[in-house]
Image 1 (cartoon, rainbow, N blue to C red):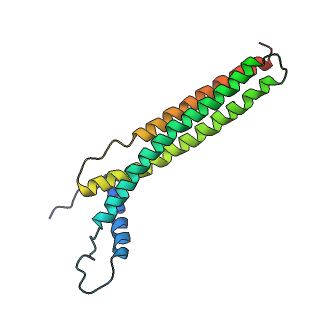
Image 2 (cartoon, rainbow, N blue to C red):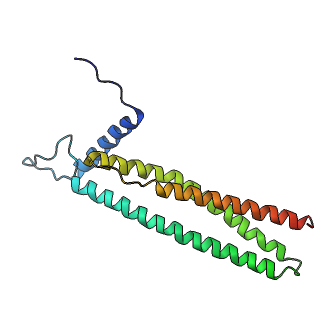
Image 3 (tube, rainbow, N blue to C red):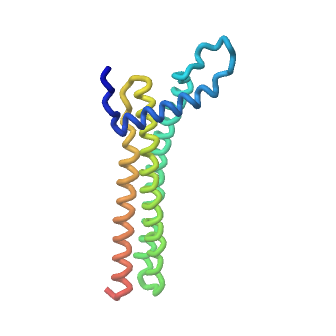
Length: 171
């Protein structure tokens, strides 16, 4: 008998994940001598399906939150810029740009961290789809949206910082 070829890193992660799921799901099966489903390969398909549905519902919710968060961010930033441009005569109005700069940097950091964490959930959805034998839905849109939004926050924050520096230098 010929040895099987080595598994790719993704295949090995799937095998490890499936073993963990099987161990966890066996714990949910009641112990009884007449229970034939409690085997080493046992996976509760209903529980796995509910987990899949939960992940997909969370994706929709998170994507909706990203859109709402963008509306909030641009409304606040726009309000600060509107205040700045309508009160140019005031000597301290230039400092009103610090809050949108800090907000941009902080939110960019949060969105980049979120994009990195979403990859773990993407993998789990892919593993569940592999287990059920159907095609994985395109769930990377949330990751792309978080990265794009974080990048826009960085660009806007840098533009505001350059503007503040030019204002302080007496441009």
